[in-house]
Image (cartoon, rainbow, N blue to C red):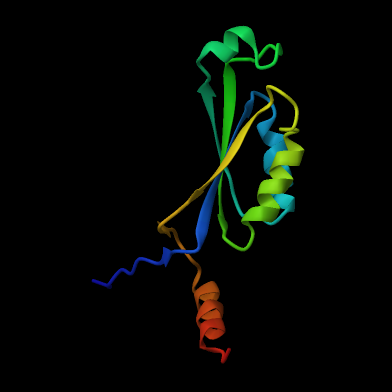
Length: 125
């Protein structure tokens, strides 16, 4: 039996964006164009007083889409800003975004990518 090894990523961050239903596709496309490698989108239902009254008098739909993207720390600011602008989150009632630092993450990493990373870490500074 072969020994299995877990590749742990420690320099990654989770970007979460909660938006009105129907907006997620535009945000994901913009994130891909900015360098994101993948995204998870799921549906949610918002609850609270703001849904009845609307933030700043704007009616807010209770059906939401949640976009989650794991990105490297060196990409996080660029992708976050791109997603914010694509989702027009500077408009009242459009949604919210936040960043969560991840202690570690694990996924499949192709051998050729591992070899490039190892070669880069062995280069003199």
